[in-house]
Image 1 (cartoon, rainbow, N blue to C red):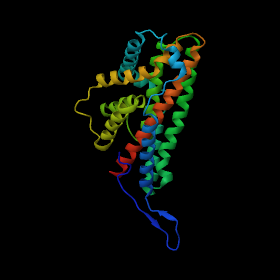
Image 2 (tube, rainbow, N blue to C red):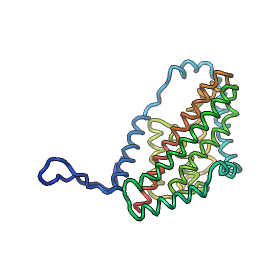
Image 3 (cartoon, rainbow, N blue to C red):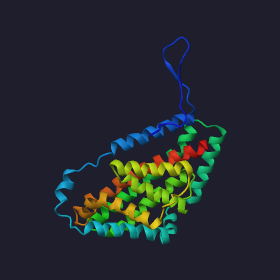
Image 4 (cartoon, rainbow, N blue to C red):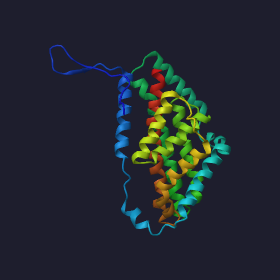
Length: 278
């Protein structure tokens, strides 16, 4: 994988041995986000099995995976068809768009590391609030022994977080192209090994040309994203269905939301930088 589209040189300062970094602020940020991406791919190359997962293997019914797949798919379909207006009532879209324009104007006046990173700083602040809400919701329902019925709420919170992230980088989430990007990045954040590499490359292809793949079908992508989520969350959703002890499973809503939003922020920032250079 290429780590930089614009190679740079390090020159020696006259009269000394210290190397001078002559990269532009954009080049530094591009190299940083590419390095973060490579680190993420290495870290998530292999799926780690925990002692808890191993102990639950024999207790999980064979039908649970299929039920979770369908529940996640239905949740995405409902949110896309009817839930976007509801989600928009939970944050100030106009204010976020206004803040983006202010940051973009400041960047036009002076493109430096501070102005470039301002977009990510705002996205990080929004993500922290959504993680707190997701954790409270997941633990509360887990105490009551509510597992699968929690999925629409979890998907709604997940999409809320990604929608806010997209706005901080200047992208409107309510288009066919953006739904592809959102669904694919949620899917990729749950994958490992070669599947993760392939999904990440598909995202990078879109970042490069901004065009939907010829093979793209939204319903098929919803099924793929739902399957990836259910496979990752099956142990925790099973545990969340057990009263009281389910609070542990519910707490993982925030854990996985953090994982998705961290990946989303990385990919949106890379896309933002790529479009900035274009």
